[in-house]
Image 1 (cartoon, rainbow, N blue to C red):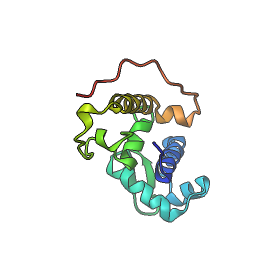
Image 2: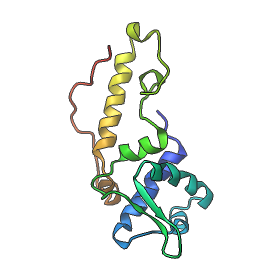
Image 3: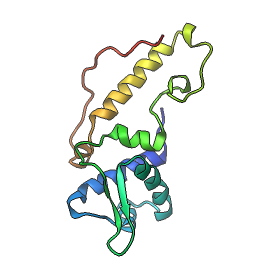
Image 4: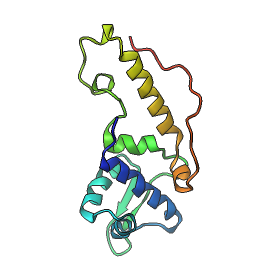
Length: 149
């Protein structure tokens, strides 16, 4: 799966907000300048993050954006799902995906299901705190992926 620019920028913005978490609201123009992202594009990134309840925004002279959750409780998976919708590697396994008539006899569905489970597990194991402190995160041993019937 290839993640789009919006996902990469969303992670960068959330890391930036984590670094300023104790200071309250951070103006969007400051985030745009520090991350070298256009202000107009950044506004489009913030919308799904706010809608998902990951970020709160305030208007006015003291306005800006701040995390809605402590950095330890927000994961990369939460952020990616907010901007991507889901992390399914193929459409037929997405919660809102297109049903596939061939899925019951598909020889590769178990591979895609396992890959998706690994991606979800990894993304959900990395918190914003991990990302903001630049901790090296590695894949943890996993249990068997759920079977697809």
